[in-house]
Image (cartoon, rainbow, N blue to C red; front, top):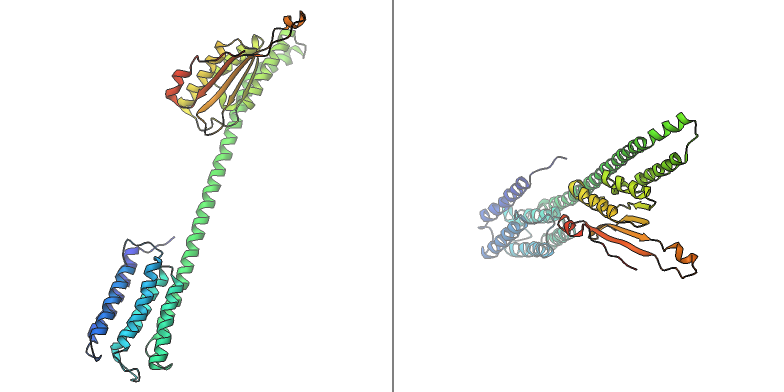
Length: 353
């Protein structure tokens, strides 16, 4: 997108406005009294300087817009009061017509179109009352109104182009993010598939070699592998080599292990994630619970992973006719996200009955 430096535009507008001031000073000998035109020149210069201030925002403040309109009302009244409207040509003494058009063009460019039309509208009405309808063209009132019209149209076109550019930029960013997400999902699927093949390939080859006739130990090993594959799908980022090792160890001793990654640790990566997973592996290695559940916490919480270990009631009590106690919580551990808090978490668990 081609842009024009703001300083260049302001400089050109300032030079053009200064030209009107020079014409006004040159024609001070024409009016009956120079005081009202001098006041008009000062008002116009102040309004122009405030409207072209370099650090001002693109959209003109409302109070400044009303001030410009007030100046456009005062300047024709002040200068016109010292001129004869019946004269066909007052020369440069009617400098205020172009000055009002310039000031209102600046106002329209700075997104105050309604106020700009109000300013040139008063100039139009004043000229008809003061010099008659025939003076609208000869004094340049029509030209001033055309300037404002062009400024309004350009401002709206530029504003629309800016909005379109922002929308296109937003759409491009969304498309880029979508593509990155798709590539990330594809990469993750490839990683999970490779991990699954690494786990299942040896057993599949053994099944082929044995013709499907497996011993009970081999069947149990297949169940362990099926659980490990299920972990790769549901556990996702909850897995590293240490966690995989402890999960398999717990299953081999008869425990039921469930890993659920619901996206709560997607923002963790690198060393922070490894510390969390190693803490999870240590907790699983330290418990003898019959059921172990590890689950990621909700997004935005200070906890990364919650680990619960539960022991079932002793079945021998039920056989003797005694009431079975409630399940016993052998492990309850909340692994925090912050690295500095992980050292306090390792090995910490609460036992409940």
